[in-house]
Structures are given as structure tokens and as C-alpha cells.
Image (cartoon, rainbow, N blue to C red; front, side, top):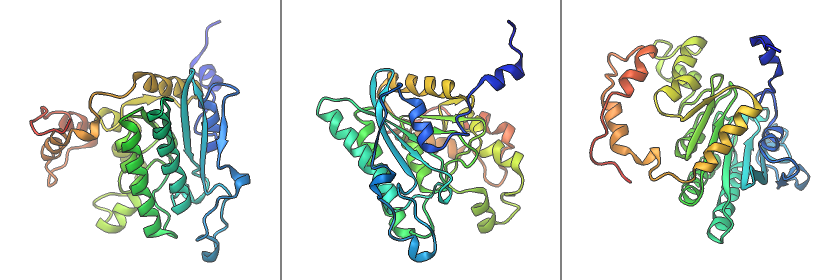
Length: 291
């Protein structure tokens, strides 16, 4: 039977439409998922209720261990429906601890990779400095584990990954995105509020996705793989990234190359989004990179 484009679309299972817990379990081999620090453990933020925000009993982060194609992994999912995926003291500590435990297991002879499902606007405003401190711990934990086992980042939904957590995304061994997703240090609304609408119009969705969107981030080499919004496609991409193991050199270590790319862009005459991939990819790798 010939399958039309619409039939193929309807036959897919959207990854974006799943919540964090469903996403984590969808990636793992059937029957192997086991959640750590789940909602019934009631590990929640003590800072939200005094500020009039109802806390969530898992603080918006899901940690699930299991097997992916027979390999041990821990999947850490940020729930975008809770506080816009904002990271606070407790949720950040859960992420950092899960990564550190995976590193401990890997050093002890039980290799454990990590998958980060990153749907977040960054640190919660309600927890400010506490959130920033715990994001720093997350970044340190990513660096610790990625020397031993792959740390695979996945950004799937339109909320995207922004703020301090985007730094953790940049440290991942492999970064997988969909066309619907976004990635940036500062969100469009933040840029507009600080620099004005002439700098970045936060209401111009085509402009935003032409710069921050998954397609552009893969074209410019800031992400590695572009996949369809489909559970099967994403699972295959994550499994492939885990199988590849630890690379000889991580992208974030290529400081000289990144500096050369920045110097190739004239901020007074920035390239159009359609030209960005060609301009950004033009410089040859200079000396001075860190291996």
C-alpha cells in the first residue's frame, strides 16, 4: 500500500506532545524504566509556596534509569508545563546528582550514559541565585560524565532551551533538535526588552526560528542532528549518539575555531539568516584549540 505524506504524518507518534515522564520512558527499552526521586518522594522546592506558587512534588524534573538498546542510561527530563521548565535549587540538584551518580557508576565499571531532555527557559526567577548556582553544578556534572560516557542533549519542543541551561546543552557530547525547537542563551523577549525591538522583534516568529530554530542551529554546527517530531525517529537518533561513545574532542573545547567564527561576523552588518550558515562555517580551524 502506498502511504501518502498525510498518512505518514498521522502514523507518527509526536514526541513533543508527551510530558517529560512519558518522553523519558518512550526512549527506554520496554520494561526497563525505573524512576528515581519520583513525585511520591515529595522532593519539592521550599521557596515557591511562600511566593504564592504551588510547588510540584518532583520539582519539575524527571529522572529515569533504564536500558536503551541494551545500554545503561539515565534519562533526565525537564517538565516544560511546570514554571515554563524553569530550574530551581531542588530540580537542578536532581539533575546534577543524577549525572554525578552516572559518572560514579561509569568509573566503577558500569558504564552509564545520560540523556538530557531540555525544555526550559532557564533559571526560575523565584529562586534566582540559588538556581544559577545549581545550573553551575549541572554544567560541572556534565563535564565530569562526558569524559567517561556520552551525554546526549535533546531539544524537541517550541519552548526551546534558553538561559543557563543552554550552556549545559552546549557542553553535551551530542545535541539533537527538531525543526520546531529553539536554542539560545537569551530568549527573544529578553533580547527585545534589553536592546529594543530593532535588535530582535520577539513577535516575529519566522525571524526567531530562522535564527534560534533547530534547522538553523544544525546548519551552523551548534547542534548535531535534526530529526522529525516522532518518538521512533528520536529514539533512533539518541541510541545512535550513545553508540558513538565519547568523541576524541568535544565541540565546546574548540575555542580557537569558535573565536574565529565569531570574528567572521561583522556585528555592524550582520548576515541575513539565510546567509548565516555560510558565513559561520567559513573560517578554517585555527591554532589554539584545546583538545
